[in-house]
Length: 192
Ligand code: ITT
Image (cartoon, rainbow, N blue to C red; front, side, top):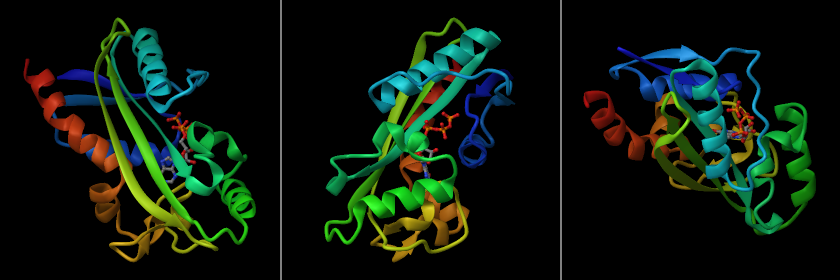
C-alpha cells in the first residue's frame, strides 16, 4: 500500500480526515510534529496546496491537506482563511466571533473546506471543495466536534455541528462534502 501522510496539526480535523479515508487502499501516516507550514495563501485552495505540497516534499510521500474555515456574511466573510488565527483557543475564537457579531440579525454563515493531495514531488494531483451553509447562534450548544462547531447551527437538522453524531457531521459538513467529491478521484489514483 502507498503511504499517504495526513498533513494536519489539528487533532479534531485529523480524526475526521482519518474517518473519511478509512478503508481505502492507502496506508495513512501522521505528519511529523516538528513540520510546521506557514499559511501565507489568500484562499483556502492556496493554503491547502501549500500544506500538501510542503509535507509531501519534506516526507517524500504522498500527502493530503485540508484548509477550511467559517465565512460569516455580516462580517464580510471573516474569519475565513484566518479562522484558526482568530484566537488562541477554540473558546477564545468563539467568544471573539460572538462579540463581533453582537446582536446582528443576519447570522448567515458557511463553512468551506478545500482538500488537496500532493505527489511526493510536491505537485498537486487532486483537489476538491465542500461547503456547508448554516447560522451562527448567540451562545454555544453541544459538546461534540471541535473549533466553531458549538455555535454553527444547521437548519435542516436543527442541530449545531457539536450536537450531531460523528456520522451526521461526516455526511453533512463542508469536509464531508469535499471528501465525497474527492474519494472517487482518489480511488482511481490508488487503483492506477
Ligand atoms: P492545519 O492547518 O494543521 O490542518 P488548522 O487548525 O490551522 O490545522 P486551518 O488553517 O485550515 O487548520 O484552520 C481551520 C480553522 O477553521 C480551524 O482551526 C477551526 O477553528 C475552523 N474549522 C475548520 N473546520 C471546522 C469544523 O469542521 N468545525 C469547527 N471549526 C472548524
